[in-house]
Length: 95
Image 1 (cartoon, rainbow, N blue to C red):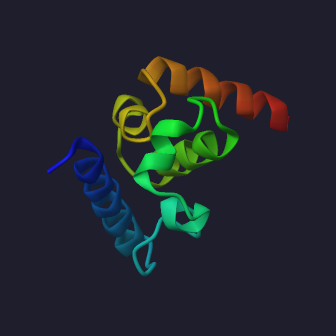
Image 2: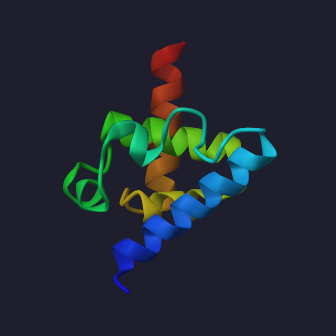
């Protein structure tokens, strides 16, 4: 099985677990790759700091117990520290 397929299964599993805990049908809220109409290949081709990736990372971080390193790796965003900086920048923009 390819690394991208494994990542997709991992994200889907985490979404399902988080969704059931929150009383949802399986997706993390209305987001996720399905909400964006993206494939795993799109994650690899989009920039690490893509606004939609950052928003999805934020949503995963808030609604699951996944670490920043795990989220960054599975969303193809580089290191967890990069995701942390992107989340901080997004928070500052919203203030």
